[in-house]
Amino acid sequence: MMPIGPLMIEHRLIERMIEVMKQQLQTWEKEKKTDPSFIETAVDFIRTYADRCHHGKEEDILFRDLREKHISNDHKRIMEELLEEHRWGRETTGRLVEANEAYRNGDAEAASTILECVKALVEFYPKHIEKEDRHFFLPIMDYFSTEEKDAMLNEEYEFDRVLLHEIYRGKVKKAEEQLKI
Ligand SMILES: [Fe+2]
Ligand SMILES: [Fe+2]
Image (cartoon, rainbow, N blue to C red; front, top):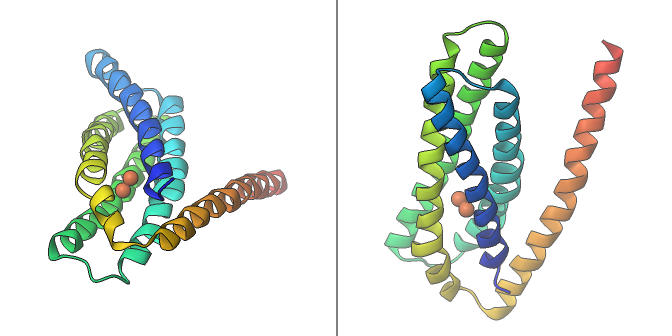
């Protein structure tokens, strides 16, 4: 498998979660309300899976190695756009977390920010994924030798293995800290 294989498989799971968020959003818009627990689940998915696990492998492995190559101006431009889009996604998710906290603490006004952020995210992800799947991932594979592609793929597997343990170490640490409060 090429190193873009696992990334494209991850895109399919991100799309499924985005579809759930889209459908939830339609209900909330009609009923003028939101669901803080669902937002927490969605934020955990976006931050842990879509950002740390998925964008992490794109940025720290694929894009890192691509920077070492003499790539076309077009590919350079698309890579910069993708990086900027990752940053925008983090920022928007951060706004969503803040608004969700406020809503949980009784600020009913925060619902409009929540709906606005969810709407922005469900519009953003499919476009971002399409840009990578259809206009970037396959063409950039031509810059790499078979050995380089294999090395990236192995590094991706190792990245996931380490990340899983890091996530749960973090959860235990947080639980320990809460015990002391
Ligand atoms: Fe991406
Ligand atoms: Fe991606």
